[in-house]
Length: 525
Image (cartoon, rainbow, N blue to C red):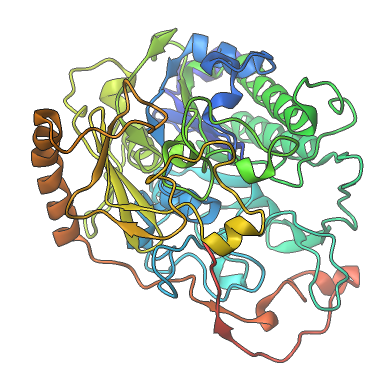
């Protein structure tokens, strides 16, 4: 039966993505894509990128069987805007997932956020419906938790997971615990029905998410339906957790335990594709939503390898991500591509594999990577990478060169209070604690010979002038064509928290909604 089924499809698409580790999967009667992404996992967390403990055998094997992208980027150094960019194919400054409350501030979707993914945006699962795809998200959504912003209102057919991160536990009086949903109704809440032991780090959530993903793949394959799975486990986001089987097994502490369990889960998903006989029909991609959170290291944060700083910053450690593409029979085994690429390319690439044209009524920031993946003639190598922090273009990469137009790690006040996004990596004049503009004379690095951004190229050299002459027109054109979206992350209100989600009545889990009192959200960095 499996052999017969495999012959009825040309391929499927599966995307895997997680909060610091996530998975996206989708299958179709046309080419199928499976995308795996690790949210807040750092570039240096994988054995294939040199992590010495070698605790990611499944992801390392995935790379050996597919294509590794050492120069792959997120769209923002924070989770919510990156997820919005992946699912829309557009920069956060275009799709509205940013704030204008203060200059160059990172912003996301905590419980008190009023906004969410704009109804003017078109998400990947909405596009895939044109070809009959059934779509599911497993895990963290993080694109708005009010009813109109939830996954089933934005193209997904199924959902098992949470709208926000697993912060807590809260006392449910001045802040409710985060709900867990099955489709459009809550099943319970984190730290209540869905346990996370912050003292020991034990939780079965990753295993629950794994079973949900495997069940979805089984059902869609049995029904011979094209499918798209976005698997977004959040175990590597502080407070990190792992199931009892993995606790204490890593050389890297609790964070390493979580990575090992996510690696195991990816292995189980790939094995499932083989057992169903659909591995040649399924495209899988693994990446991250932002760099490792060094502020949580070493106990609850990962490694960004040789790169500067981490999450929250537009240095390489905050935005360069691990990335692996896998598609047996289509992608040549053991290949490495130095194509500059980013999460928005996954939107455009997935549509191309499904035989769908991208929306033509808006600017798309993602490129179709199928020529790279399938070793076809292509000329994508000179495309730029834009590094945004909120409403400000902080830096641009073109080829091996990166030009910083603004630098900032975080404020002196935060830094003196122990908030440090670059622990042990301070670079004078680069990791600045005040916002420094360098528009007239950008700080330029050659990332090939200086991946850690420690040695700026002298402004007096011919190399500097040559690079500036090539990057400046790219920046000017980008800014001239930019039409920012309406910012969605400006307003907060305690009344919009998860007090009474749909389905709470059945469970007796409804909480009293306080009086609305909106304010402008404060984004310190």
